Image 1 (tube, rainbow, N blue to C red):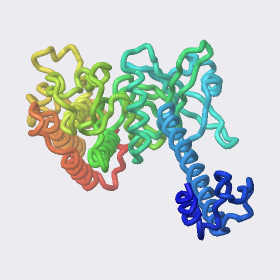
Image 2: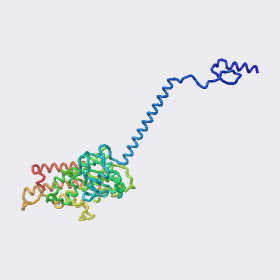
Image 3: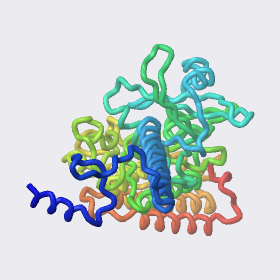
Image 4: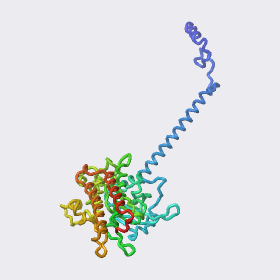
Length: 417
């Protein structure tokens, strides 16, 4: 035992910080509190780290909230941003007198268009309001397509979108509408086929007016087909989708079937299979081919033939075996005076038709229309790759217009109505 006592004493020698333990060691009692203060450097380091982590967490939460809110807004109303006016269902209903038939100015496969007056920055503005028929299959996809297309394009020959409304109507049903600028001279179909009477006189489009409109439409398509980063295909070009402003400048509208080139679509919706209207849709679309700029060129070619022959592509007189294109093609180039819209030829007064001046004007008009119809035939070739680009067609029509001006300079277009 004495041996172990000596060993214990030697083990604790020099360990002055030891406390408590067994009684035999005779150590001082341990204190419950320490008088040693934490290092001030450690305190500052802990405080700084905590503050930094707190600020980083708050910043991350704010960014996440901002991003999620933006995504939610984009999904609900695709085109609304600060540059667009805000309108409600109640405002649109009031603007159109409850969407009354008196304000109805047109109807299509996906909805109806009404004329209305809305207030913007204290001023009243006349607008065209397209109300989607959401019970129609494909109408919702049409709404999205039109919004997505028109919010990223800007051209003098395209209809301008002012705003959209995605809300609930007075019956609690889903409501979607697109608001456009109002173009007072209606659409091209009305001007060519419905014989509009103004001030007791029938208003018809003369040769130069039709040629300028054709150039306007080609210009808009050229812009769409060269759009960056992705070309846009209209997919439903026809006379009723071409609107005219106060100066008879053409604006292409109704982008309900439009899509970006090589755009992925939900084929189960049915909207993806809609690729134009009867008589205007390219033949390859009937085989299920992907939409392309060639399809728009085909529709444009048929549109040219209709504008200058005065015949609809769906007229029953052609029959299934002929059609408008073949009807015109068989008349080129020697029998154009037979199939031309007779309103484009100069009026005869008291047997003046046989005079040199009248005959010369008539021949030049026929030559002009012949050149235009040849462009239409070229654009509406059966095989897509045989059709010219819309840029080339536009250049040809501009050359025809320049030649027209050269022949009739000083005469004035109105004298040839």
